[in-house]
Image (cartoon, rainbow, N blue to C red):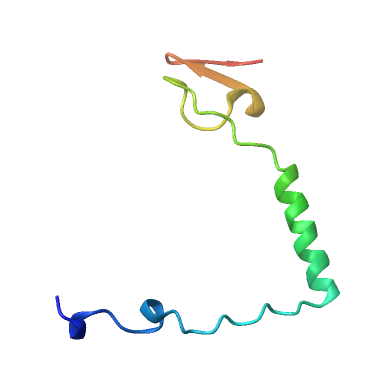
Length: 73
């Protein structure tokens, strides 16, 4: 590989200036903080069942179906 075959460009040279951080208004900062708080409060996803029933959670929707039997309780 010769010197003329080397990769050139901003990635290879690293001379591309880094853009300054955006200045956000206070309302945008509050909105970002609220969104982060909602993400932290969100319940973690339930683990998948092995050989479990497909579809929605039967307890939540008022019926149960296993091996062809459906029971309302």
